[in-house]
Length: 317
Image (tube, rainbow, N blue to C red; front, side, top):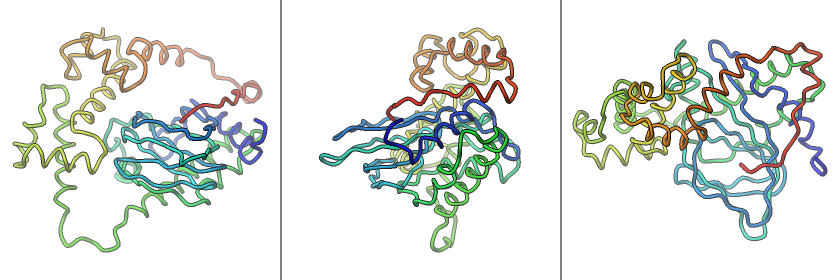
């Protein structure tokens, strides 16, 4: 990776962690990707979303990112985090370019809401899922930039888990209001209750109007407050939950596609397949086959694993 000594070795080290589960308390973290991200002048990327957490570090140049409708600036040395499902886009100003790297991860047992486990673990997942439309301080990425590929895998996993914990503390601090509210926020309560509905009844035919009626608010009010808080429509969040549940069934059972579609609230397996591909960016069959193959792969010893570095490829965020 010529011209990028600032993060080249750190990225090689991070690539050793890919698809190797890391335990943080009762949570299981899986680093899905660690890739270089260089963009030429006047690059832009339209609004999109993805089912993983995405951390982007900008080494050189700068760019603008819009997250849940709010645009903010990222300069060289800074970074930013996009939670799963949040609609976002990127752009340069005139004659601008940028370079850096991108990390993508998931909590393995996450179901689109607070994960099973202790209250602290559930809070970590909930907190990371909140939208923070601003750049993180330069020191946020410093522990990652200090990683080296020759470090033992166990030490790399420990260092990455410590970095995630530190990022959580910074993320949590950003969520603390300047003054405690005198009473519970109505919008927050409404969103939480909507999430309860979605997670309880995702397997049934469920309309947004039904939820609005149950919560004694108008369709328009519910839709507006939910999108403002999460960056998603109620239907988009419902679809995310259904796909997460479908993934669990694809991994843990041999149920045919039609039965899985029915089990997650979709009567048509063809619509289920289209929706799954749109959200997970792969087909249900490919997802099941990939997970089955991963379970059959032999576990490499330290010497074998150390020889298996993944190549660094320039890719877009």
